[in-house]
Every structure is written in C-alpha cells, then in structure tokens.
Length: 446
Image 1 (cartoon, rainbow, N blue to C red):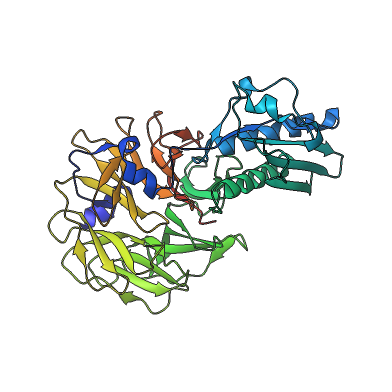
Image 2: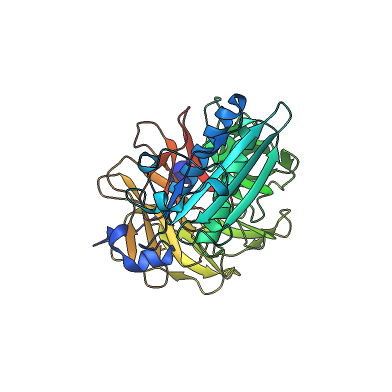
C-alpha cells in the first residue's frame, strides 16, 4: 500500500468490471438524467456585421465563438452556415424570417447583430429571435461594451451564448463562462494551470517548481485545493495546498504528518475532505476550510482515498477503499457513518469517482482487461452503467461541468496525455490542450 501511495497517479484506484454496458446513446434513462432530449430547437447564427473595416476581425471572432459554444451545448441543433441565405441581417428591422425558416436552414431561432469598434471600446448589439413568431419580442437582446481586445470579445460571446442556452433550456445554466483547472508540465515541473472551458486563455496559477496534482475548485470558484509536495518536519511529502483566485496567491493550509492527497470540497464550501496517513493508515479526514479540527471519518484496515462529496445533497461521500482486499467503490454519510460498498458484477480499476451536479450519477475511469482506461457513468441508486469512451488510448480523471451535460477528462488518444472535453453522452469529443503533458482536469462550479 505504501508503494502505491508513493505514485499518486497510480494509487487513486478502485475495482470493478462492468458487464453488458451499452453505448450511452442507446440509454433513454441516461439521456433524461443528463438533460439531453432528442428534440432540440434548431438555431442559425448569422454573421455579425462589422460597422467598419477595423471591426471585422472581432465581428468574425464573436460570431465563431458564439457558434462554437452553441454547437457544444448539447441542448440545441445549430444549422450549418453553408445553409444560410446570402444576406445576413445586422439589426431586427433587416430580418426576413421566411428565408431562415425555409429549407435548407430550417431554423426555429435566429441570432443576429453587429459590432462597432474604436481604439477605446468595442460595442456589440446582439439579439435572438423566434423566427416562427417574428412579431414577438426578442428572446434575447443585449448590448455589450468593453475593451477592444480578443479576450473581451470572447467573454462577451460566451455571455451571449449562455443567455441563449438559459432561455432555451428553461433557465438551466450554460458553461461558456466557466473555467477548467488542470495540471501541466509544459514548463518543466507539474504546476496548476487554468483555461477557459473551450481551451482558450491557458495560463499557469502556481510556480512551486515541484509536483502539483488533483486540483479541485471550491463551490464559489474562489479557491482551488490541490495535492502538492511540500516540506514538513524536514521531509518533503504530499500535502494539501490551497490557491486563492481572488489574490492570485497560495492560502495558508496546515501541514500534516504522512501523505495527504486528493482534497474535495463540501457543497457549501465550509469543509475539505481528503486522504491522510497522519495516524499511520491512509484514511479519510474532514477539516474546516482553513484546515482546522481534522476529524477522522474512516477507521478500517485498508487505504481510503479519492473522496467525492455529493454536490446535490451534501449528505453522501463516494470514495475508494481496498479494505476488502482490492480497491472498490464505497458510499458513506458525510459524517463517516453508514458505509456501504457498491456491489458490482466484476472487478477492475477505476480512478477518481466524480459526482454529477444532480447528485445521481457517478463518473469514473475503468481499466479494462487490455489495460486501457475508459470513461463510464453509473447511476448510484440503480447501478445502471453506460460507457462513454472506447479503445482510444487511456481516458481518465473525469470531471463534470456545472450544467451536468459536459465532462472534461485526460486522454492519451492523440499520443501524449492531454485534456479533452465531451458531451456527457460521449459525443463531440474535443481536445483542449496540446503543449506538453496535461492531466487531472477539474471543471469550475460557475
């Protein structure tokens, strides 16, 4: 067990083998659970008009980012721009609904607008209309003003896309404005990095020049807890570190004896649960957000690690333990009582169970007999399982987006270890990182 702990990337494991798993696209119960209906409204996003030559690059960028966000939303169908009529309206008065409703566009909704730019400011007018009820008010109508930079235009495009998604999904959140924390070794050491949800704006947060692993966002996205290697009592060992997004600096967190790994937040952001060998055996402990008053939750002969706190109920923690001889998945109450093993038909290795925002589904990576890893999702109550990836390198460390319709994970399918995202039914996989080796992604909660 201690040798397994010395290699964190291989120690966070549990065992089970799934028999008879079917592709997620065939599972009606699963599509309902992740909120991805087969009936999707069809949208068209007209090219945003540039009011001057200098505004053309940002008008094109805004249009592209909005289209990409909507295409990856999972709740609507985006008509291909190749089907669009030749004249794009720049304001509602120029809109001719019939040409967007007719084949081949077949749109239910139309996004349109324009962009003006000076050396000091970019101004974007953006609308979404129901073209089958053109006399009604705009479904979305926004004016965005800010610095004339690529980053600001991208931010406005993400905001407009999220407005559309919220309106068409009955108020459910979009994820275009969220971020993903991850570990990258592109600078030499393994540091914590962060990027926009679509892979843009990648930047380092830490510069510890050591090994950092398993970043986890706080529920309000103001902090990231992670595993770091830091000196303690004259020895360098795995510890829990904390980074503040508000100050851009590390926050003080106590150093404990032994190995301390895999932090996870309580849904209200007031507690941290993690695995620690401070009393000899690797067990789960819970502390307040400042690391005070550590309380031991598990007390058995075996290692317990990789906790994941149910974000919906706050009452249940999923974790990994080898107390039965081989690593398996367990559930317990958040106070450590009523521990129960999830009985599964066969055995294998699974990394980092991760609760979906609905508190119903658990994502995990299962190592199959051919030594590959693939992403699976299980309904914790019924133990129904779907397979999301298959035979494309190693696919590990899944993390849910806050909308419950997307997952981010690490994969070697392209050769090197990189961060990928996909819809929660396994469709639309997209590579987010390319430079160096990248791993352990975690999607921000907002």
